[in-house]
Length: 190
Image 1 (spheres, one colour):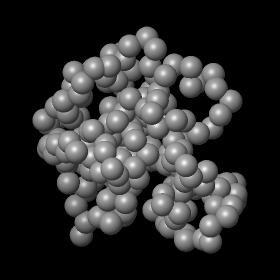
Image 2: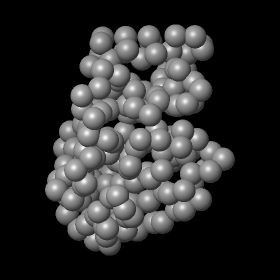
Image 3: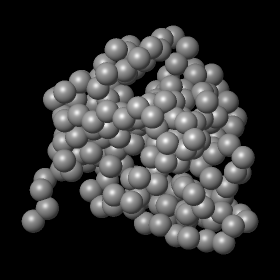
Image 4: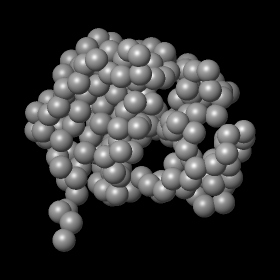
């Protein structure tokens, strides 16, 4: 992931230009434009394994969406684009491009092989501050996952860590759990 810090104002215009001119995915987290390449390989495989489990188990009024962004309340420039997000079914018919964080049933972020701990923490805090009820991060570098729940005052009050192979426990309206035994791992760095 590449980050660009720009002066406040029209950060969204800068993010859109980065996407148009480079093909990178852009998002604005805490006033910093962050860009990353489109999903591929094991990153995309992780999203697919979890999405394929979610879709048949979701209630009729929810759907799993990729490449859908969530806005930060009270900050028109900040938005995040999780790897997968579960939103109301009607989102697929909406002309808006930014979803309300209060509508998110779960957001999934797959940690990139180049992502740093500080960037992961910044994104996690962003989701908590926005009020996203449930955030799941999967880390193919280590074969681990973390489930964050109950955001309050910019931090998640519920944090549960697990290793791939141990199911992720979820609560309604989501399915009771997500299996992690088929999640791909990145090869160790030489």
